[in-house]
Structures are given as structure tokens and as C-alpha cells.
Amino acid sequence: MNLEKYIYSLALAVVVSFSMPASAGPTDNQNIVISAADEQVNADDALELVGAEDFLMPTLEELLGAKFDNLGYVDDFADVKQDMVEYAKNYIGTRYRRGASGPNAFDCSGFTSYVFKKFGMTLSRVSSAQGTQGEAVSLADAEVGDLIFFSGRRVSKSIGHVGIVIDVNKETGALKFIHASTTRGIRIENFPDGGYYAKRFISVRRILGQPGLEVVSN
Image (cartoon, helix red, strand yellow):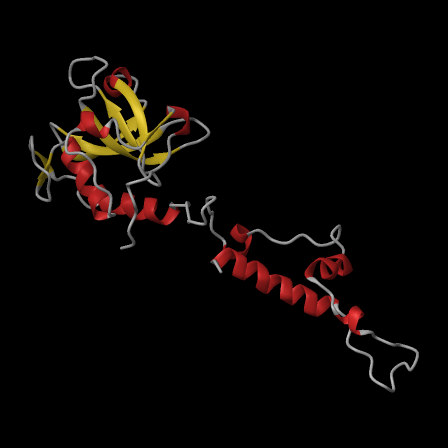
């Protein structure tokens, strides 16, 4: 029996036990006669005693306080996202070096792949390949932990730079991302910035929760 069925069965048993009256003893009411057939109350009958209109079985998400997908796997990565942000911030100020994958120096894709590897997810080594992984999402739907892609120094439609979204303001649509800057190393930027990155923005991709990119606990 899987976890969801077990919890529902347990909850149902508790409901039934509190909804059924105690058996009348010989001195309680001599006019009460319970037949064997009457004693065979199935689960459906028990729910009718409770009253379907008065009772609403809590969902598994409500019982356990976590979001589940259709297969029963937790798909709320709030803790992972926060841990990822804090881990990435540890490297603020680390110098940029082309082709470097850390921990003493990074280029942009070397940094993103290094951070995601810490959490059990393998990204391609170059930013253009990372731009094909996971699921494409709109900028308006960006969340913490997503990858954000830009063109390189020359404005174009080709991916040349990548960072990790670490903060999103849903009211204004503004966000922050952490990345390996060629001139300042690992740093945090605001987006949109009204200039350099706004002109070079290409896409956002979601890695967390995608098939083949499993998350491990740390």
C-alpha cells in the first residue's frame, strides 16, 4: 500500500471509530437488537453516517504540509531553492576565469553547473547547451532556482551568458540573479537593469523538478 492510500485508510478508520455509537449493553436498552447483517457496515455506509455534506477528507498535501504531483512525489522545492541561493552566495567575489569550473575561479556556465551539481543535478558545461535543458518558462513566471540566459557582449539571439535567479518580486516582475561576471567575478545583478542585460535577455529555463535532473538532499 502506498503512503497516500495508507494515510487515507488510517484517517477513514479514525472517522468511523468516532462516528459509530458504542454497542448497547444488556442493561442499556432491551429493545435494541443488532443483527449480524447490521454489524457489517462497510466504509461507504460509515461515510454516510458521518454525512458527506458535513465532512471533507483533507488532501494528502493538507495532511503532510507538502505539495505532491500525480505520482506522489514532493514537487515543492522551497527548501532546495533557499539552500541553493545561500550556497551560491558563498562564492560572491570569486574571480572570473574563462573555462574555469571552480571552486577558486569560474566562468558563467562553470558557476551554474558547479552550484547545481552540489544539489545532485548535472548541467551541460557550456551556456548554450544549458539553454536547452529543463523546461522553458516565461520571464513573468520566473522563480528562484531558474536559469536566466543572455547573449554575449554582442547583442544577438545566441546564448552566451547564464545566471541563476535568486529573488523574484511578483508584484513588479523584477528579479535578481547571481552569475560570473567577466570583470567582477561572482556577483548579484538586478533585472531588468534598463541597459546591458535587458538588451541581451534571451530566455528562462526551469531545471528543478525536470525528468532526469533529480534533486538530492544535502
